[in-house]
Amino acid sequence: MTGDSRDARVPLPSRTSDARLVVVVRAPAADAYDRVLDVLVDAGIRSVELTLTTPGTLAALPRLRERYDEAADIGVGTVTRQDELSAAIDAGARYVVTPITSAPLVEAAVAARLPIVPGGLTPTELFASWSAGAAAVKVFPAGRVGPGYVADLRGPFPGIEVVPSGGVDLDGAAAWLRAGAAAVSVGGPLLGDAFRGGDLAALRERTARFVALCRREPA
Image (cartoon, rainbow, N blue to C red; front, side, top):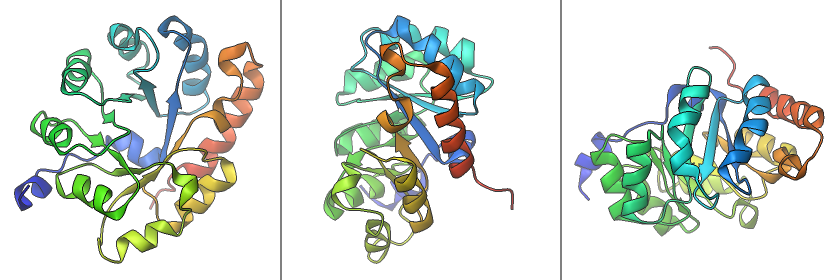
């Protein structure tokens, strides 16, 4: 696309940007969300990515937004098709995340004024999404490259906003943020066994550590 798409870039919601932490939530089914989301949001999580690999996510999204909207941004991830993007928009997603590089998905999200974070790994993939108007680009799987990749990308692509995803634990989150990542995307290392009947007090403690580490300090 032309430079017009960059001028029309839709940034991430301010709560997500300030939190610098997106929790990727994969549940066995959508009716399992509330028990875990209650703990996450109460412990300070301000951005949650619900994945389409969880059955019933889009049907549950309006109810979940009504429940959590005052405290957290609820986005939709694992979007790979135009019909999924349209359904996420209709259901009220605050932002969408893809595991792939797809210019048509980015263009459609930008046209709908919805922030989108497309996935990719190579400089070509990431720059294609960024130049098409993405709010940020998701480096996935982040463990294959490491935090130094932020500086590597910003050499030829100054200003690119990077969100690492895939195996990012507490130490990794600290390293990526020090390197200049806009936010970190965290799943298993924070959620642990929460969806398998795990200790919710332990989940709250893990969440508090991630929130404290990632929260942007006031200027």
